[in-house]
Length: 213
Image (cartoon, rainbow, N blue to C red; front, side, top):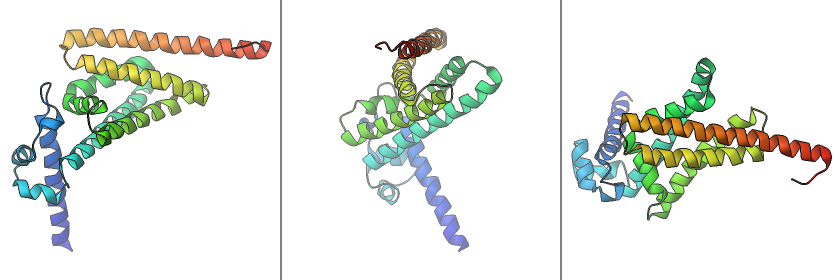
C-alpha cells in the first residue's frame, strides 16, 4: 500500500507541474491557445507522451486551469471578507485584495479574461460558471446586509462586471497607475452601493404609499 501512496503523490506532483508550467508560459502576448503540448511538457520536465497520463488533451488542461483560477479568486475574496472584520471597509478591502490577486497572479487572471470571450464554447462556459460562482457568493454576502435576493444579485452582478473590466485594465498598468485605478474603482463601487441603498429606500416608500416603482 505504501508504494501506491508514493506513486499517487508523484503523479499529483507531475500534474501540478504541468498546470504551473502552462500558467508560467502565459503572458500579455501569449494566450492559452498559443501553447503547445510539447512546450508545456518540456517546461514541466516530462516527456510529451507522459502528458496523457495526466490530461486527455490540452483542452482538459486549460479547463482545469480555469477552474483553479476561479477557485483561487473566490478563496482570496473570502479571505477579504475576514479581513473586513479587522479593517472595516468592505469595498476598499475587497478591491485591495483583488488588485493583490492581479499583481501576484497576472497569468491566472489573463486566462479567465481571455477565455471569457474566446473561441471555445467549453472555455467560455467554464469561465461563465466561475463568474457566476463569484456573483453568487457576493449575493449571499449582500443578503446578510438586509437586501432582498433580487436586489443583492443585481448589485453583485453589476459589481463583478465592473471589477473584471477594471482587472483587465490593471494588467497593463504600473504600480502608481494601478493604485489610481483601484481608488477609482472603489469610488465607482461606493457610488453603486449608495445608489442601490437609496433605490431600495425609494421602493419601500412607494410600497407604503401604494405607488408605482
